[in-house]
Length: 503
Image (cartoon, rainbow, N blue to C red; front, side, top):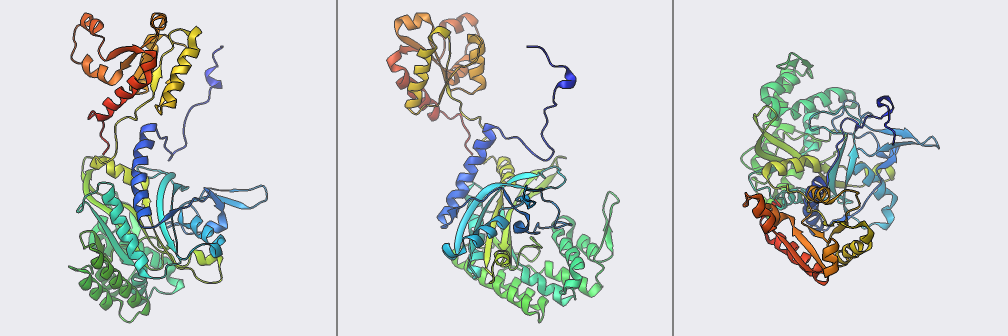
């Protein structure tokens, strides 16, 4: 075949902000998803799946923490001039699904979903345009007991994945308390929406900037180490004191925290309702045995600024890892959620209460890898039947079929190379063993089976080539009729060997 000119060849490249996943990646994350799924189902949630594409108006403009709420979405126009968008989360599609099947669904409707979501954002380190989420939601549940259950389930998920107590914390706040604080400092009206958003974003930077940095952002503004200046919210000193008092209101226990918050929100009915809900959730946590080392009432949590209407919660990993510069940092948030009573109601005459929790799968997988809790060994490949005589390929195909019918993953070598290249292929496929039959073996009615894992181990103990050829380590010759049973024994022996780290 003639070679193409270089100018005629396409450059193989993937779009920025997207990743390819290998079999090992998929298997490792698959184990993690199975563990999460078991916890969700233990809590009584059922699986449901919605499309990757929705009508744009059904998704709505609810991207959290976006400067431009109507941006950040991949959209296109259909042939009937309807605008469609790739889903940017799993909650907005659920709202459409529940509204569409409302009369046929049990109330509350408890479901979980896992899948990819898409953000049309500038990619960067740890920031992708396509990533996976794993959500659980309870729609039609007005009681904060449903919110408390989400927090407990988040803690259980992390522990099921091997994150020890003390290495994580589920932090809980309430959007109503935030709104009560905004009312008290004169930012409760719609006309103050931009300033209110600036204040909430400043609060969200407390962990990174501390109270001094947040104070600057609440006032005139702040210049960072690089010289970039961020304009502040322009609050007066009294309002700044109220906001700082709010974010530092966390006490030794839930009772002290809620008492501090009650004092701070003053006479705001919305704020007092939020404090009451936090107190009710704390009672449920205590009754179920989830103390403040696992779930903590924390006023500094502000998430889902365009989304949530009540309790909000964030699952955070508290252990340290080294960043790209080798500096120790806390891993941070791997999931969160909250109450979104207005989302389903967009499609119906009445409001529909709802609450949910979402796990960021890719971020959590990175965290588990840092903890050594994510499977890291290569996925075991298939048994490879080598083709030594192409005129007898039917015989080799029968061997493969016999292995498959016994439930053994197996493949026939379909390339055009000789034995050395076939062995190299089997090694790259992580094959546990290979089946070899040349003309001499066929005449005798036998096959050779080479245990590749054991061969590698024994090879490290043999230095002399002659001794290697004479010993032929981990290679056995058996009757054709014993092929399946011998391979089964080899695989069982490998499964019993401590060669894999399943996390």
